[in-house]
Length: 323
Image (cartoon, rainbow, N blue to C red):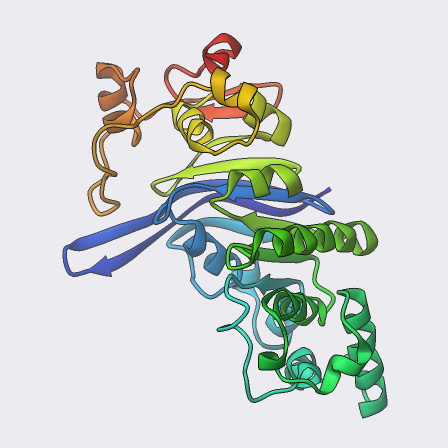
């Protein structure tokens, strides 16, 4: 069942040097109970897409559907109810929590707006204790302040806050990048357990491919405001069909010596183009080792093989991906 359906959304911003195209025709789908990993270089538009799905930015064109409903057409009470369905876990567990509030106040803060969820202080306190236990904290932690928690505990608190309204979709914007490696694994395992337990869907934004490989069911690769490749995690990592995806995977570190010996490191030449004036045709052509004249003249078609899509004139074959 498709829970989130994004079709052709665009978003531009006025900047001193012109119009910056942050999103330029994004297509995306997220099923119920699924984790979709969104990867790409800094500045490619990942956070703008997240803000748009959170209704913090309105797209210039295109459609967004949550359960078949256009959230940008909702007003007042309907819009307020919809906001419960989509919540976010932020990158920085230190900056995203108010140091003046206790853990209980942080978790309960959304209920000050959504007053119909719990009618009494006793119900709210019971739910706070339940959420703390759910994310691996103690109910006795309710009266502690954020500065009394470690980084991993703070992120658990942020996850509890995101779950307070019972969302259908949680957008995880680099949720473990600020944590130590051992703590990262704990938080990722927590997110996986919560998904199995609650049936929530995740849009997992990250630049760390090893993290995405661990948590995602499907992967979308983003480059300069476009989704250039989508597919199952196994397909995208094992058989990348877009040259940019192959370059990203070649740069990912690995601890196994046999993998390092087999891997061909691809060094992209040229500078990352500006989203204010992106290249004609294929946006990746100025850095692509197999670009030809047609790549400059014509936007690339989307090639789909068994649900594995790549936006490229010359999508890689399995033999190309293995080299």
